[in-house]
Length: 200
Image (cartoon, rainbow, N blue to C red; front, side, top):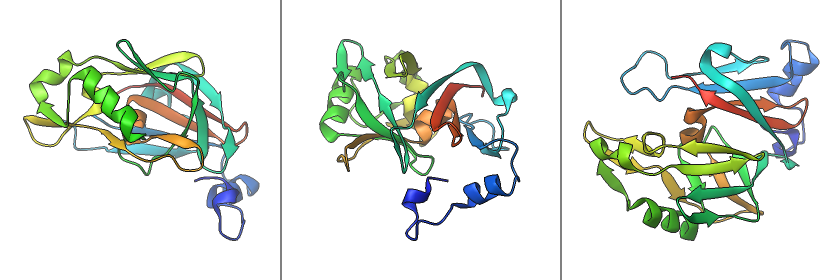
């Protein structure tokens, strides 16, 4: 679902062909991922050509794609209590194929120190963890402990950030952990990505 620049032969993607053939009403697609662990019925939804209002609340924050290859955007900064990462802005890709949130190993270690978590905590303690705030498009998009800790057993939760070395100037990967909190719209017509609070 990326841009043609990712294609080995530089051919149109499946979604671009759908746009050309007028098989979708708008050149967008949207993702909702269900993070409700008690609900095993629906894991999520990919909607081609539209947005589903039943899966989000409030207004969208849109940010421009900085490099039309992956869905690459700029993060203004990341805040955890008194700690700031990428204060001068940094590049990130929004990637539904990445299950966690990826970032520079040293930044991940700093965030872990701020929240007081090494790798895992009892799930009954995650509500006490501080917010991790992503500032994107001038708006603060917070993740709570319930968002960034993944439940692996009934009682054990693990930290859902993973150290990833920067590649081609991209420092962060906003994967399913982020998309689970924020309903995400990929707008190929306007080269933008939009985020709104997901309704779970």
